[in-house]
Amino acid sequence: MAKKISIDPLTRLEGHGKIDIFLNDDGTVQDSYFQVVELRGFEQFCQGRPVEELPRITPKICGVCPGAHHMASSKAADAVYGLTPPPAARKIRELFYNAHIAHSHILHFFALAAPDFMPGPEAGPGKRNILGLVDELGKGAVRRVLQNRGYAQKIQGLIAGHPIHPVASLPGGMAGPVSEKTRQEIAGMASEIREFAQFALWFFENHILAQDRNRELLTGELFTHRTHYMGLVDSQGRVNFYDGQLRVVTPEGETMAQFDGSDYLEHLAETVLPWSYMKFPYLRDKGWHGLIDGADSGVYRVNSLARLNVADGMATPLAQEAYETMRAFYGGTPIHNTLAFHWARLVELMQAAEALVDLSQDPEVTDTNVRSLPEGRPGEGVGVVEAPRGSLIHHYTTDANGLVKTVNLIVATVQNNAGMGMSVKKAAQGLIQDGAPDEAVLDMIEMGYRAYDPCLACATHALPGESDLEVRLWHNNAVFRTLKRS
Image 1 (cartoon, rainbow, N blue to C red):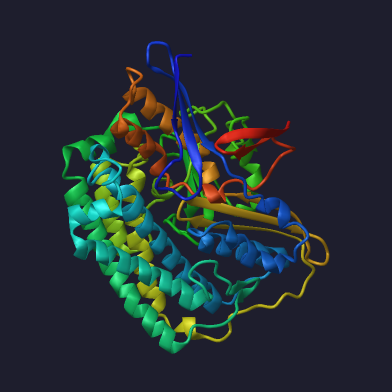
Image 2: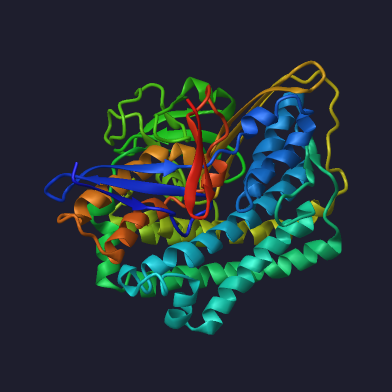
């Protein structure tokens, strides 16, 4: 082995990870590893807790996507008690949740992803950030980005008590209704977000797609994998973030399975590999054959592009128009170009914004009947939502007193673990030929994982057995003692 290249730490993502690239003697890439180097452990320390506490505990997994865990946990707790929230509670949850999707998509696209296209990889790390966008778009446009992300955060806070780490959703419904004054305030901000979503799509189509380099990246083979896809669809087969059935399609776009979230174990399985704390979910019917794509592989992908690939269309009119524009650009679906996750994210931003407008104008969200109280014995429950980063599954079992016995969290980023590893390796093999990559090449390799909008803080919750552990104690810039457990 001639050389190892490490990208450590990874940037413009939530959590901590690194990429190790191993080169052959001739300077070409032999292998690469996308590694998650942190452990959260929520599956373990939630055990023994009253299940009704989990919608308040599990959002602490992450500061970026706490709303997704709040909703998935609430739905799992509903199922544990066999509860159906009243219609007003469901609408309030969806109002909250569409704001969560909007905030996350605005944050990721403009603050984390867009600098990869404008100013681009060659600009240097000092420019590849939100400040670099100021030079490209101007202060007014970036101020608008921050303002509308702020609106989405404020809507979450008004409904759920806190914009980060929400607390208002309970088993059976919500802690309280939305007041008429709050509804009107939310309706005003929702209209602004819908207008901003139109700007975001215009920006993508007229600035990012207008550059030949970006069009090549968005359509080229360097960032393409032909995999299966999974996401929630509603009763009409359209994209739905809060509820529905999970649909899996093949690389050719044919529906391979469609099932209730409670049946996920019949379709999904997980494996572990020795070089990462993250598990590798795969399609049970296909089996695990490693990090490979194709119709025979068990690898599937989730997140924005996957949702558009599995659905028959969008649930709102302006989002449907944007979906059709994107679909026409690529000549149909499924779309396998990994960087198209970014475009799909903006199509979904439009659907979330339109849903915010519709729900905030619905007087039923002020109905005071917002909770069904538990009556039967608690048992087992599964809650599924589409997190901004893909399908999120919470599965709880409890004893007769409602104390949690087991927790299984299949988080969106984990389901894209294989996809991220494949994308990083393919980009490295395509870009590194002489063993001496520059900053721009390494940034393009990072684009391979950044398209998935990974949230590594969400991704590691179990420690099967004991892992090797090495602690090094430093003094005066030298290691004076090393402790090891293996």
